[in-house]
Image 1 (spheres, rainbow, N blue to C red):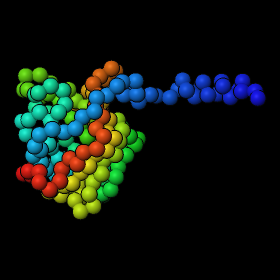
Image 2: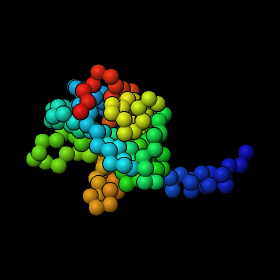
Image 3: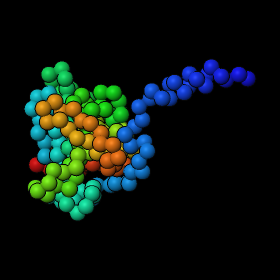
Image 4: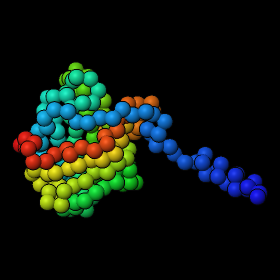
Length: 182
């Protein structure tokens, strides 16, 4: 068999593919530790849930961590959409455009800017009984990868930090009955 032309085509395609920001990194597995207070902020076309109660959730060192689950609608009204969502979809690949988003603030101490981590893959599942805007909400994340980003405060564009921190969450029920909610 002659693969001469095919090899060149494959090499040309391979050179132009953008690797995942965490493809070369070995990301430690994380599982949220500690209690989780749920705080809901929901202005019309967005629902933001913050898990952030002055405790170490298991990211970085022993300083406080915060996790935000953000649900946006670019149609002007928040849709009551539930089910499983691909966090690596094109729409969900940047904080500026995501409809289902996870943003972690690692090691909050009030003296330094916390490290920001944004999704690069995995699934976020919203329980059918608790669509975005519900209080409480039941969320599960599975095979989620998070990588360090910087965020432009004026545009909301997130940019992955080359060689930055990353984490992998295998499966975890994030918010469910039994968690405190405010």
